[in-house]
Image 1: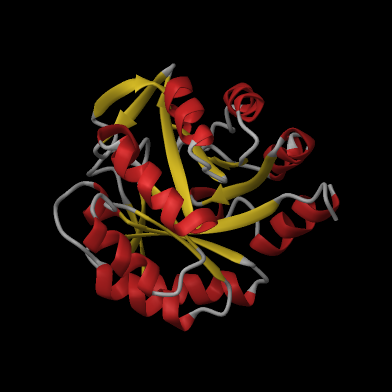
Image 2: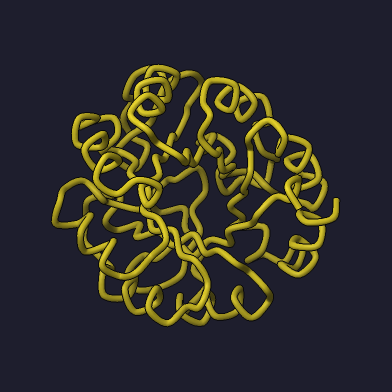
Length: 243
C-alpha cells in the first residue's frame, strides 16, 4: 500500500548496551540491556527495518563495531546503520555487515564532497542524517552547529541522495511529538524519501506522520516510546499500515 508508513524501531548502542538519550545529550541515557535481544524483540514483533546506532562512534569516544556487525548479521530484516561514519574505512566496514543502508551524519556537514562520492559509489545504500536545531544543522553528537539545513538538503539531493533521516534535536527522546512542519519543509525541497526521527510518543503521532506519506515522508524511527511502553510495536505497525 503506497500510503503506508514504514517503521524503524531503534537500537542505540553505547558501551555494548542498548540505551536511549534525551535530546542526544551524553549522560542522559536510560539503559535497556542487551542490544541483540532488543533487536530480536522488534524483529519478532513484525518490524521490517531496524535503525541501529553506534553512539560511542557518533560521539567520537570509541566503537561498538563488533556488536553492530553481530546484530546486523543476526537479523533477517533490513538494517539501517548510523553513528561515526566519517571515513572510507568506517563506511566500508559498515557496508560489509550486509546492512541495507548506512546514514552519514556529521560527515555530511564536515565533508560534503566525501558524501557525494559515497552516494555516487553506493547509491541508495547511502542515507544522509539531517539533525536540525532551529534552522541550523547540529554536528558531532549535536554539540556544534553546521550551517543551514536547506543548503545541505539541496546539495545532497542534487548529488543523488535517495534518503534523508530528519531529526529535530529538541524533540529527540523527549516524547513531545514529531516536528511535522520541519518534515513538510524538508520533503518539499527534495524528491528523496524523508524518514522522521525524534519525538514520537503516541499512536496519534504515527497517524499524523502517515498523513505526510503522499508528500514524501515515508518512514519513521521509533525509540523511547517503545522502550518505556507507551505502545507496542504491533500496535504501531498496525497504525502505520492502516491508519
